[in-house]
Image 1 (cartoon, rainbow, N blue to C red):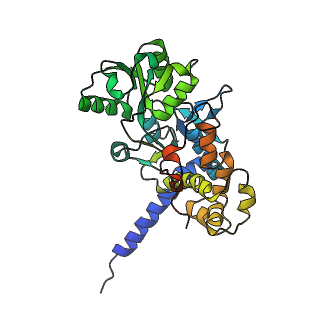
Image 2 (cartoon, rainbow, N blue to C red):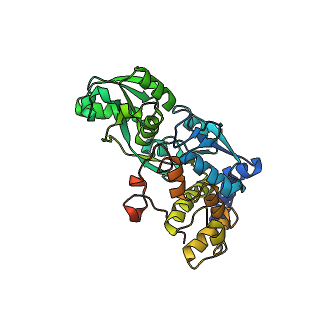
Length: 339
């Protein structure tokens, strides 16, 4: 009986698909020697240049961790500022290899835009920043107000739906960036500025008289923010996903920027050993070397260190961990197991 060619052809197809995957973004980045990382045009605490022009923030730290894991140097990053309207095109077109720009994981972005979220690096929610003299204590007190809202963001749709469902009338004042929102809000072009609460807290902390403003306690949405890659490049998605997981796991396991070099040599905890490369071949499975996670952690610290230095207790913003605390400390944060 003649053997069917189907099995060999399937094997060949699988081999070709695997080859395409391994010849994707990871190889491009390694060949170029630089990671092109899409960030915001300026969102303090997440991604914004400091007074010396150096990019800082929670999202920026993830870009640097990926560069450290892939290229061996956290500074080999080209930060590409994107707006709410240009960010997804920049990723889809290949202008950036990775988008870490306070972008909410939604059905449409994940499915219709043919982009892939590689995890959640910050659990946020949409809120409202108001002048105290406006006398608003609740979102329902904003009826008739003018509200600065970023065009092309989830905030625009969330606000419209919430207002419709609760019978609130408002005048939308379109903005293209957080910086423009702050300027128009302070200039009186809008009564209210709506954004993710992390962004509003950062804006308030930067004002000359922060005591004259308040962030309302109510949230009108869930905003799970995370890094994005192009759909179909599974290996690159794995590299980004597990780099983020490495930062989160490191906090839980007690690995930080101060002890990671010592612990990389080996410990009594098998999961730490797998994470840092003294056991197993996890780096090889990603297409990297054994010390990829060790370098990612050394770049800016574990998740707690990055949070505290970007948004938390070591900054004027001073946000509590809240939902972004570890799962065993009342939050939603945990890494999938390294095993």
